[in-house]
Amino acid sequence: MLVHNVTSGPYESRTEYNQWYLVVLVEEDGKLSDTELFFDDLDSAYLFSNHFKTSINPIDLTTDSQWAKGIN
Image (tube, rainbow, N blue to C red; front, side):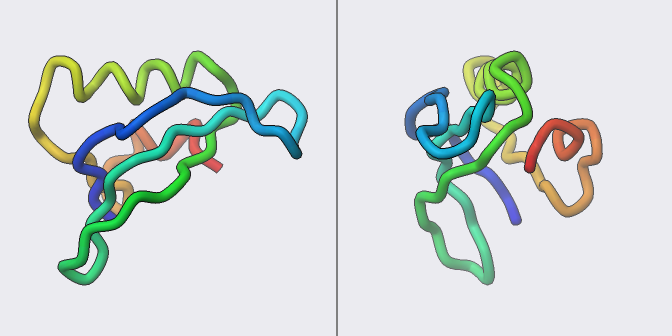
């Protein structure tokens, strides 16, 4: 799954205590869609979203373990 951009967030989950999520633009099987990506804490969500403020490169969650660590 390639993440191309953060559409909005971070937001605190209404159902899970101390979980945060971003709405992100992802590419799967050549199709683009918005989806919620959940994180263990606010700092992880914030760091992930900041990547797209300085780079246009997508993040490949299947191969990039640096970013996959804080994601649920």
